[in-house]
View (tube, rainbow, N blue to C red):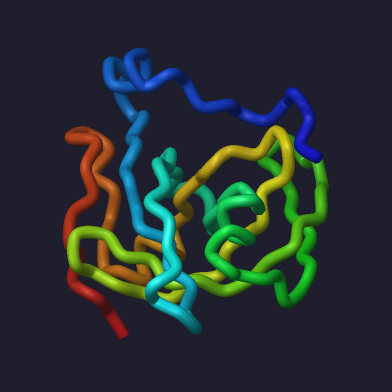
Length: 136
């Protein structure tokens, strides 16, 4: 479980006023059954690699973990979480990503690999996701 050193999301009304805080709603889809999905409100973190989703949301749409991975926070704190695979859809852009099964105290966090999977980049000034030319 993450400890209190984890950054927690701000209420939306506060977050909307702060520079650098961006929330988006993204559809998380079971790659084996596209009829099973959930629309999730995420904090976008271009400094995070992976996408964290509460495990109950992933379980509700039939996504199961396939392995465990170790993670390290910026402050050096280490923790272990289960990971699985999901598809994401954002404004008609679809991609496949690795998702981390969030535990109590974790919150929905959209990482950079999810942005890359759908060809987007975070514009921190306008607090919006924008298309980016994909490079090989």
